[in-house]
Image 1 (tube, rainbow, N blue to C red):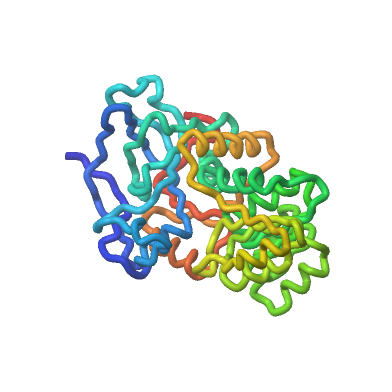
Image 2: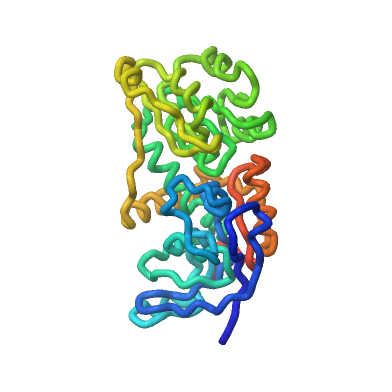
Length: 331
């Protein structure tokens, strides 16, 4: 039996509970392929799952488990009923919710997305989930040129993309990020105004910058509630994250009185997810969207990666690297 390295979680708890171990080499089933993983995405939700505090208890896996959903690499082999021509292709894909923190994964051939020529594999992985989320949010908010947008967690994986997409849509962008270092990242990405939401008076700074048409709330909690209070009458409030640990409390009667539309993203089907991801990749290939990959950790330092995210010490996207990546666009 062949073995590969993977990051195994044997007990819910602190980041140190993530440890590299050798596990059986996955075997692609009918309609599946085997992918040599070069980069695996790490999400904030995965840090909650690792701690045993997932937003939905149903998300907690049986242990031991290999976390990780989004990966990018090269198709090593194909199973029965999968196209043999896929072998050697550079792709990104999801794993069905687990198994991504590993050197190899089995994935459904139908879910593969080939990396566009000229786009770095790491960038494509960074756009796999965050890109589709950002594109869906911008579309759902119905942004129009000249409107003013507030992006919270503006230096995060999704937030950094929202800043760019909102600018591309002709909006004026106000950004709120945790700390001056992260606020500077938002400015570099094109935000007209960027403030530190951990500092007292940040909401007043945003209010002074003008009425807000749309809020993209990636923090939730008290910060999200304060942002909701900044939305003008008839505006839109779009929640996409809970970096604070909880979603923003929304008073339905109050938002109705002010004519504010609360945009909630529903579950996306496979085709919708694919279309949104392809749209993000197309923007990146055209040079209009740049994922911010703030830090990349080798597989054996997955615990450090989780610790950095939990400590709010990361900027943009965090990736695990399992092996050297091929050149951009080259299988």
